Amino acid sequence: MYAIVKTGGKQYKVAPGDKINVEKLDVEVGGEVDLEAICVVDGDKVVADPAEAAKTPVKATVIEQFRADKVIIFKFQKRKNYQRKRGHRQHLTRLRIESVGTEVAPKAQPKAKQEAEASQDAE
Image (tube, rainbow, N blue to C red):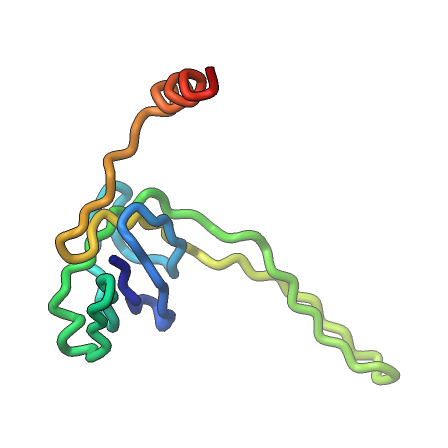
């Protein structure tokens, strides 16, 4: 099951367990966010009506608040002695999608436990 959600003027395809970067949300790290679904797909069933899809709860948890890499904006006009160089760093929020409707993401395991399981599978 996955959903198309809208936040910050953009749309994202999300499924339980996904991590996405969205424009900054005013929520503390560890806080929960409810996202607005505009389309929900569950196997053969597709709910494309935004009013109906909005009834499906999409829950996410804030992992961190951070700033993206610097983007350089360079304006230039040849033979006019015109050059402008500006930089910009966007404030972003990283979210982990906990649930879409009734489908819930699996719990994250500690890294030490994951490495132990990976080494046992390799043997």
